[in-house]
Length: 180
Image (tube, rainbow, N blue to C red; front, side, top):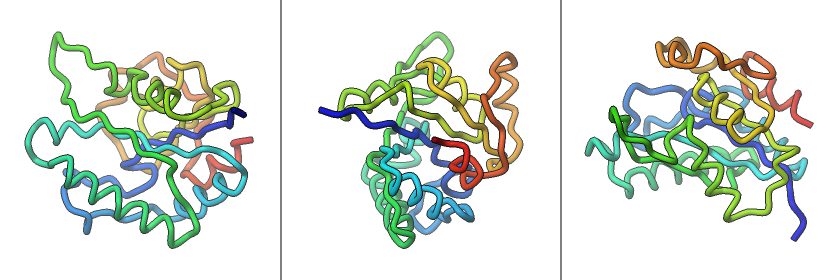
């Protein structure tokens, strides 16, 4: 099977607007240019995956079915631009001291899961996100990284003081112009 390059994209703050607690499909709003950017990647033959930590599932604020509805709405909104995510990988676990989860970003489990399901050329793949946590995820699997500034400020980046992206741009549209 021929391997394809992939672009792994953080969901909240990169594809759709950052919402404090996203629990309803009606809260899904694409960021400007995100649909067109993903459609461009699709046309160029990249596999495109959404990655998201969703600890609100373990906290009981959202069910797996509710998450499925949110992701269905996200795919519908992307389809309006001729775009699609080939899959969306989710970590439902919350951070707990002393407990390590293989799928919670910055761990690499979500990308490893995609590698098991798809033939991915990792040497030509990218990670795009709005947090240094996302960039660290890409670095751990040795792919190129792009930090976008669409997610707003957070203290989360303080936990990754030594993590540096390969590129920093304003939004997903600008990131896609770099991806080759």
